[in-house]
Length: 399
Length: 137
Image 1 (cartoon, one colour):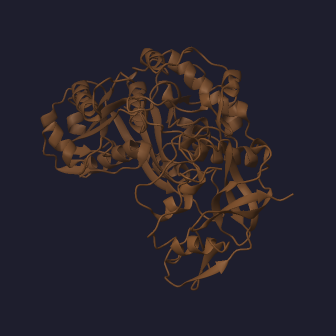
Image 2: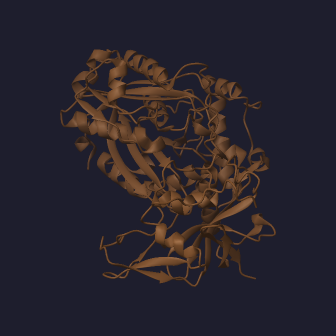
Image 3: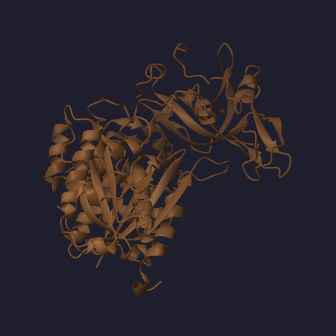
């Protein structure tokens, strides 16, 4: 596909990342509504312009989507309640772009809100026990799996299979923290979450931090924060009248991954969703300026960079080890320039922030701005890397 | 090992109940499809390749290799916080199915080689037994 054939049928026109990571007394629904108002204001649109709502149901209650429409006081023509963990928002962007492209919607609203921190939810170490038994819960609950341990299984196998080192994985946390130090909201977030050292960290700092689930150390694990945000997408006609230059959804891909006899847990669902997204956009990984990759853990980023085709499978360690994914090192894409889930914002389902920061970069608004950034990938990974997850890849570009 | 709060499989759950009932007799069972020969695991009432509904239960010898593992150093689950550190593992059984399990009788859970040969080691509960695995020496 040549550039001239690139579809520019839907654009991100409004974004908001809720600034607080400890929201003392606010509900997830209130965060969603406040973020919706701010994202619409960013776009220069009104709530009455919204005709499509995308909602993962993360704020609780029954009838996801319907209750969100009711809470906002609107009657949208399209409701999509796809719920695939942290990747839900890449799926929502993909579905909104599709719905806008075929004329079913003109202005799509995605919202996210979570009070994971205030609820003191032990997301990483709590251990999962299902309310009602299923085949999966019956086969897996007896083994004391935690979320971090699940990613540890993938990391251990990656190290065994390809010789990936702890130092290489640690570099991902080092780069991300560097970007965090340049983002005042991220620095405040770390302080508000009780992290004493909010400055740059070294590979040694990461490796010397406490082991949580081998081979993953504390500083390789994302934060648990409160937070939320919103995204507004619109048709080209609407986008022309909005406040910022449109950020076009050029390609999208979706995929699943789950345990299979003889399967390879070092390969994520990105190996399926990535090629579809790049193919639709008509671009290659080598052209990407900004890589917003879901950093639940360091291994998540390493495996996804490989699977998206930034380097060959198994060579992710060598690809990241020199720190060239920093925004100020040319030649490679800039990784998670907002500070990521590792060092800025992870209320449980981070996928929405991958798109907000990618949009800031393509508008020229990032705190770690890559000069002239034109193309970004936002890749959400929802679920558990060592067992089952969903993946959504979005390619974004500016005019 | 405190067994009081251990999250054991619960029933009715028709797909996995025959697997778990057999563990009381220290039988590690898996299924094969009668139409296409595919090894099916976790247990289901259909084949994961052809969706055929004719499956045979087979008995595994309980021998396999360690595909990957992790050591849980911190868990907040009441059954497991006292047990930590403990090792969770993916086991590739010689019959061709992959089972999530726990490694038992480890001297140092941090130094297990991926690819090691392992054998089933049953941990008995009242109504069933859990198929844990021990590294062969």
